[in-house]
Length: 231
Ligand code: CA
Image (cartoon, rainbow, N blue to C red):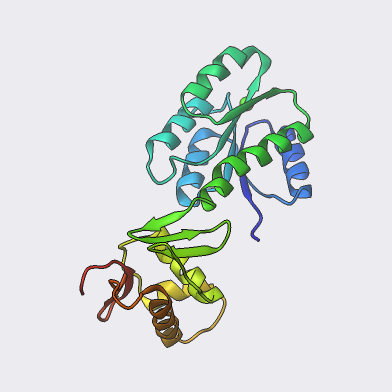
């Protein structure tokens, strides 16, 4: 499992050092930004799993950064915890209205903050990953690893399961064999692109019943897509 990545957006260097130390000790990967503009640049370039966002920041305030995040479709669901000083508490409530998921008032203990982070990651990221994936009469449950088509339980090998999960998360998009390899097998493993063809064949066999529509489309010279339209 990859470590959850937390972006700390805070201009008080001693607090950043303290947070980084405690978060890394708890197995998180930490990145930092000391002002709002830098934070937004980092978030757009490579979104973290969660943002710890200070309220009072140079350049763009925490609230403005949060608004930007919520306005952009690609990062709209990014979990955000706002850090506030006691005097800003009233404003923090407003912060929640503009889109922060939670807030914590300074001074706080690292333990309290880590508990909030874990709770929020559970609610957002992991909850999302566990949602049932449905396409036409096909249904995959990531929590139980069960795949059903038209009410019938399918028997898939582990690679076919991961392949199908990948296609279900991006329905109707065409992926080259290289895209599929990188996403399902990982970039570091060397596998021949035609291996993908073999597993697609097995997946088709497992998913398509005798009189059922083929849900996997072969796009000549391009790759594959989960799409019942005839190529
Ligand atoms: Ca500050």
